[in-house]
Structure formats: C-alpha cells, structure tokens
Length: 444
Image (tube, rainbow, N blue to C red):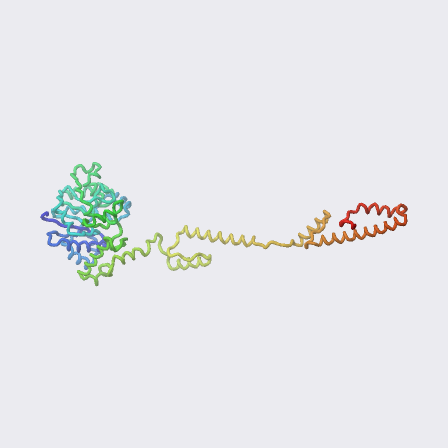
C-alpha cells in the first residue's frame, strides 16, 4: 500500500447531505485499522452559508479532514452541454480537478451517491499503481469507451493540476460536467489532437468497482445476479437517489443503503436531531421519501388562486360542465371544451325547431284547396271513411234493377196486348234496355 493514501468525496449541494453522511459512516466501518484518511471536499458557500452547525459537527466526526474549495470556471459552452443531460446542478463538479492539488501519494475518489459494499474497495491502493498523468476508472454504462468519474484512482501532482485547470478553461466539456472534460484530458478515445502535449492514459478498472444503478442493457439483470458476490461498490446515478425518490424495491441495493443510513442515525443518536438536519425521522426514510416523490408531479402551469378557482367553478356550473379536474386545464383545452359546449347547445336549439309533430289530417286551407281541385277536374271528393262509396254504388245498382224490372213488366204487358210496334216509346225503351249492363246475372 502506498505510504500516504486517502479516500475523498465531494459535497456541493445540501441535497447530497444524506449520501455524504452514509458514505462517510460506511467508510469508517469498512476501513478498520487501515491507515487511510477520509476526506471531504465541500464548496465554500455551502460550508459557510448553508450547512447548520449540527451538520458540520457530524461531518467532522465522520471525515478525517474537511477541505473547503472554490469552483473552477469553465467555458460558457458547458452550460449548453449540461442542458442535454438535464442536470444543470453538475456545473460545480468541475471542482474535481482540485483532487490533483491534494498532498497525498494516491487518492481514491468516490461520489457522494456511492456505497462501498465491502472492504475490498481499499485493495485498489495495492492492486493498481497510477502515475501523475494517469487515472484509473471503470467504464461508463452509457458509453463504455469512456470512464465513469464517480470512482477514480489518481496520483495528485501540482503540475498536472495546473495543466488540467487550464485545459478546463480552454475547452468545453462534451457533457458540460467533470466526466466529459476528464475523459477529454486523460482518455485517448476522446483525444481530438488538442492534448498531445499531455501523456494522458486511462487505466481501465473492472466494472465491479463501480456498478451503476440503474443499469440498462441486454446482460444487465443476469450479470448483476451472476457477479453479485464480487461487486465491491454500487453507484446510484441519475436524479433519483435512495434518499430521494429512488424507484426500487426492498430487495435491491437501495434497501442496503437505507439500512446503513438507519445504523448511522442510531449509532450517532441523531433521531432527535433529524429535523434540524433537514432529514425525516422515520423507521424507513427511503420509503417515505419515495411516497412523497410519487404524490404530485411538478406543475407546468402555476396553480389557480382561490378567486380564480371559484370563478372557474361557477362558470362550469353555468354551462353544465363536467366536474373539476385535480390538475388545471390548459388554455387550449378550455377553449376547445367551450366550443364543444356551444355547438351542443346550438344543436339542441335546432332540434327543438325541427321537432314539430306530423299532422295526420290536413289543415282547413289544405282541405278547401283539395276540394276545389276536385271540383275543377270533376272528381269525387275523397272520403275519409272507407266503405261509403261501395254502399252508394250498391244503392244505384238496386235503383237500376228496379227500373229494369218495371220496364220488363211493361214490355211483357205490351207484347201480350200486341201493341209492341204501335208504341214507339215502349219500343225505344225496350231497345235501350237491351244495352243496360247488368250488375248481377239474370235469374234463370
């Protein structure tokens, strides 16, 4: 083991305070009697203006030395690249360049959201020898030709520190943060010809020294199970952390982190001081933070005031609107729904106008017009009730039969008297009667 070694971490935001507490406590438990110092680099404004006295007191108990550092200014392009990551808070991570200013032979750097699982993590000091122009790191799961800067083994050197800071001022980080710029400086895969004056070299560490959670890919799940006994350290990457909205279950590594965090609270007797430390006192702070994280999503539009909410509710009642939603509608949704309601009301009005009962009988004017037309064309009036026309025809047929019977009787009398030819009137009647169409057949 190197003569003068240290494990260091960085605190640049109060949000990472639970992680830094847990990491420092875990390192103290795992290092045993090893002669290794545990360092904390903290930003000056956070240390002087934000952290409470109790937080600083606990940090001094967990870490051998607290080093207050100032940020390193990079190029303006870094902010644009950070927008691609959607992590603007990472601008301060460029301060990792100050690790090369420390007075140690070797430094193992660990991010505040990492959790060592065994003391084997300290074996790196013996197994890997790094020079001033070298850095050792595990491949990043997002782009394996680059190393993840959450776990780094390095050899501090003043000259190298000056070169690195100048490189940060002259070049934009490909991701806007420390991981991009360190790869551009030490990793030949990212060399575009601007760092030839530096003998940069990346020493590739096994992935088991920096297993990022969550991991994605075809082999992620089976490999995590297969290498479970060999994993030395896990790294909770991304915005969600075990103490803030981590989406995991009680069997994964976030549960392990939670157990260490609870042991830290118990051993240091911090249950009664958690409120002052801006932490929640509970048997399962990870569960409660997860529930709080899942409650209500961030609003894109600001919430309504009380007066606006009441006016909106009254308007909805007047237009017979659907009940109010939990989240407010956008302006486009409001206008669309208003147009829909107006169209429905117009359709109802049109239906009422068109909804007149159909007449079974014609109006008086229509009857008079129809009667007049029938008279002009010498038509018989249409009878309302059926059957009356048939009855009239029967009566006319009966009258015709009676006339025929009378005529027949008269003819028979004339014939008998021999006056058929002397009576022209009867003869004529006889001739006409032969042409009368009979409705009923003649009786035999």
